[in-house]
Image (cartoon, rainbow, N blue to C red):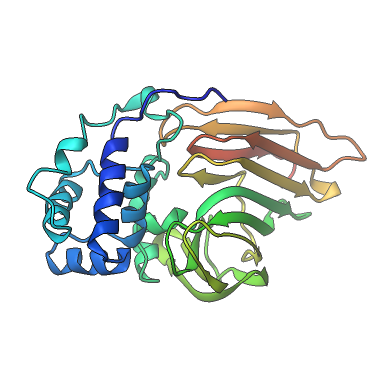
Length: 308
């Protein structure tokens, strides 16, 4: 992957914010609480993104929070805001190395995700904290052609001290009964909630122990889906540049698809870029879609079955 030699737009803001936070003696939790008290709420995760230069405030509500931040951190009015520069470009130029992508740019119905997250006291900024450096997701399709289960393995890095949980969101084609976590390692499931009308599900996991900023951890869990899910594609969202992405799918030998391929979709509504296509025979009924240094967006596998 090419290395950018120029300073990313808004990087000076992140450095100045990080310096101001350090000199203030306040923790990110304390700053987040004071912002809430001033009716300009910003999550701890978002503050971490801002000071690390991985994202920056652009919306009206976020810009109002910057003004409040200047007061909280003892900065002169406009000191931090002046370092933001022009708004980040949209469209195909927005997906440059080092830039994060907001959840509402990759989910078809972001409002469903936000409603589900709120049920576990989380917000969109919590979708990718701790930062997922690598992610492996394996799906199993049964002899009836239905998604049966999934297994997820993540290598994560804490964005701030005291990182103790993460959330996982998935959408089912229907929700006759809740999906069930059947296995965990490095974490334990704390809560499950769902936005039932949209069949959007969220699991809250607690890490085995809190992480310090920059600390790495490996977590793994397995989920059994409710019966009868008839999706013909599966996908994962990546919000920040990562090191690797692995999507794996295993079909029952009696239900191998006539067609199966990987795809990348940089934004919701954008055309899907088809990647490698699988070839199945009597000995092979699995497919892997692997990407190194994946950029933000949706990565998925789509398949077509001869029989249902």
